[in-house]
Image (tube, rainbow, N blue to C red; front, side, top):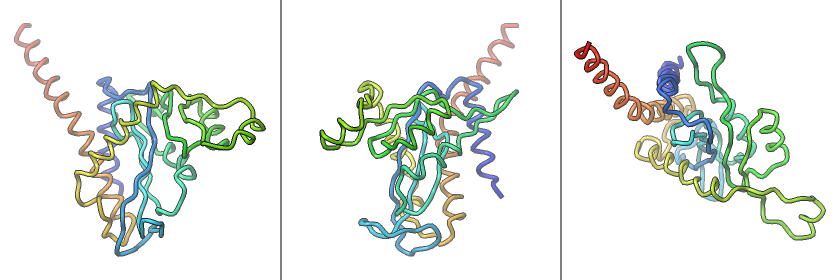
Length: 214
């Protein structure tokens, strides 16, 4: 029914209104979750049967969007679908959908994906794949990625570590993908709520103080 997703998106909207979402930079990456019992959207890889987590986070590591799929699908093919899940409602106007910059590893070095980011108006920090010198010469001018931005990729790795604290996600036992996605949505919701709750409490304290002064 999408109840958990609506609550998660409401939490993102509240964080955005408090200025706690960093839209200046975002990070995209994927992770593998073993699925020993098989099920929907489970693929066979060198690591065994499993599902794939695709996660896009803001500059603070808060999950803006995610997509779950079979582990045998290349991450670059799921990148655009993952970006499409970014949708943060605002009090007025359309939802926010585009961070200013996207940082990803060289596995996302694809002409098609780079073109998609340009169409969306998103700047990118994606280092080129290691290729022979002859091939690079034919391709033309190499793509340059800012080292300062790329060093911040630990942000998304830290977000995966936060999600890894939810043991229900580490191994997928659910045969139905919707059920597993429901648990994953609860996890990203809790990550956002942990950041939101201190802010709400602080707002309440400030309002009480201001009312006493008045």
